[in-house]
Amino acid sequence: MENAVHTHQLTKKFGSFIATNAITFDVAQGEIFGFLGANGAGKTTAMRMLCGLLKPSSGEATVAGFDVYRQSEKIKQNIGYMSQRFSLYEDLTVRENIRFYGGIYGLRRADIPVKTDQILRKLGIESVADSLVASLPLGWKQKLAFSVALIHEPKIVFLDEPTGGVDPITRRQFWDLIYEAAHGGTTVFVTTHYMDEAEYCNRVSIMVDGKMKALDTPSGLKTAYNVDSMDAVFQILARGTSTK
Amino acid sequence: MPLTGSSTAVRAVVEKRNMNRFTAFVKKEFFHILRDRRTLLILFGLPLVQVLLFGFALTNEIKNANIAILDNDKSPHSQQITNKLLASGYFQLRKNLRSNDDIERAFRKGTIKLAVVFPAGFTENYEHGHSTRIQLLADATEQNTAISLTNYATAIIRDYVTDLNPNVQPPLTIDVRSRMVFNPELKGAFVFVPGVMAMVLLLVSALMTSVTIARERETGTLEVLMVSPLSQGQILLGKVVPYLLLSFLNGCIIIALGVFVLKVPLNGSLLLLLSETLLFIFLALSIGIFISSIVDTQLVAMFASLMAMLLPTIFLSGFMFPIESMPKPLQLVSNLIPAKYFINIVKGIMIKGAGLRYLWQPTLVLVGMSVFFMGLSLRNLKTRLS
Image (cartoon, rainbow over all chains, first blue to last red; front, top):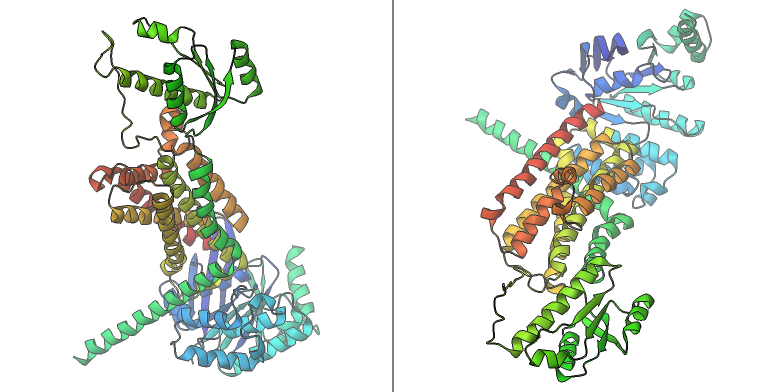
């Protein structure tokens, strides 16, 4: 089967600053792929290139089989995206938000109410369907934002630090949603700086200063570095470069 | 030909989806606008208040100015001139003075703006064909008022003299007759209505669009929109269309207020006026989008719109202060102010009844400016998101 994401020597320079330095990796379909790194390590830049928001400086990349240089419109139709700020409209109701995103992702008009009911039922938020999003607790907004990112049943969903600012229990519940999506065949590409979340991923890559320092399953990485947590793996990799 | 048949069908589906996308976006924008009480207030409260304020309160016409009369002649002539002055509507009698000392006292107190002095022997001199004079004293602490008042009074008195001797031409004098073309009554509304219209439309359109895009940037939703299949053009257009409609409605309200309440004539074509209004709104929206493409936050967007647009519009468009009396460098700067052109166009159409034949130049400038700002912001938005 074709890889959901494929990159080879993908590089982005801003002037003389190299934000993403020749990264090469593949993500299989249906995989939960964790993209780890400190702030400024180049995670967001890499993700933006894959989403078609940024043109790479060099190297190659395909997303859902489409080339990031020439086919960014095709890519946009096949991916979902959830930003760290959840990107819902606070002055719109839950229902209106769903209708809006359904609309801009080109769902057929008749399908939108069906899809809306589906999401509301799944998240158990029928009672607040007509309340403004501003009035929802953070955890609900987060789950809603995720469901909205999946509204057009994309092949790949990109999650940019999706669990920022919520409590551990809510985070755990959120990961249940991620598993469910992956189970349904959606590839999940997720950036995070919570190391406990890294354990939930099928495979994890760790970015340090624009370079990809490691890429393996969480257990593979722990064995390779002979430690018992992902946090320790990350400490070794990050400290290794900072003392250089 | 099944192949072409299916491909046109596919294209039709794609186009329909594109349209659905766009309408979903526009609908969302309307929700934003209609749910925000502040936005609504600025959108519809502001024009109303502005037009009425400028139309009624802040006029430079003079009505019922307080004057005092010192009649040392006490003749039918002086009485009739006084009556004529008071009947004009420009003046009302505050005081009948008794001596020259009273004049200064009244001015000091600030109760009168103008004093009219008929000298003793006024009638006698006049009837014997000698030259005679009436003295006008004006309080020049407000210099414009003083000039206007003396002009009004002089005109009325001269009128009286002409009425008395319709056949007699004063010998060997140069007879200057002025006529106030287009605005014989010198009504201030003629100047203010186009000015306020330019100001309000510019403010509402530019401010609102710049703030709404900055808001999407602040909340991170702009990023999501950029990742979605919506094209950049659709996003920009989706932002523009609702405000274009609402601002146009606004423009119509202002025109209606001007014509029906402030009695500004509409001598030219209404259709042309509306088209030019639409063009100006589009320009204002382009500027708004341009501002939003270079700033980060709503607050900065708001200040940029106010500083870059409102102040120059008030001071340099010729709305408040005549461009001709500005120093040369400022006159040059005024050429960059969009409102200047729009005000000329509106005045041309409404008051002079001019058609496109006379107004193509400013119209072309507005078109050029729109294209310039739209293009610039399209380019900016692209690089800014990178």
